[in-house]
Length: 296
Image (cartoon, rainbow, N blue to C red):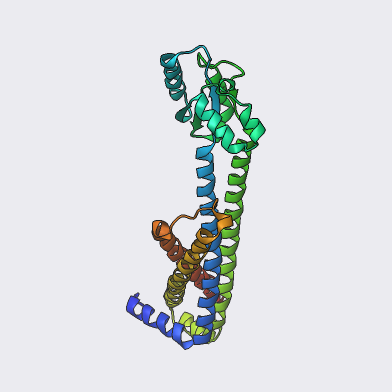
């Protein structure tokens, strides 16, 4: 028998509409699974972006020798900037350091008794990789004009950022993988119920010489259409949910420290991911469901 893809498509569409309730159930379940997977993934992605923002603000403070003049201090900054893993360097005068201290400490007594001479010129050093922050701090200490004991770095905060990022990534990947497997299992069982009604027809086709793939193709098309339609619906719902949550976060005064990536900036990879996941679930579920009925 020749592979007539028009026939396969026609049969797939017929299967889709001849079992309207089961097709509706399969689409509903797939949409729900895609929404859950998409929500977890977008939450993890936004958490990753927020952590990257916080990491970019993490700084190593390097205090410059008090005896250095402006030219020597500038040379120290250039030497630090040339070190490996250093992304940026910002010079902070003692006056600016005092103003920042006063902003954080509103106690009038403390502010009245703090003088600029108590502070030192410093460099705020920003790094590319927090995993190397200890090595970077040691390298900064080795710069002439800084010296040992003149670098302040909080390795606990850096370690906390790394731990949260790794845990969030691992949890999101595990949840997505579990939900993908569950989705394929559910839709395969749903499609299996539709194929059960056609078991006699499949058996007859096998007996007259139809190949397994000739029998499979209509179900593959059916699964493809179920998955693609589910992906379109889930993507639209995800967009609405995401925008609603983002507006709620932006409007809440207590959540100003949180920020969300605009959906318009990520809709293309999200749409591609939904399409790929939906089609994988639909086609994978169909192939799994039909396998049992081909064993005649």
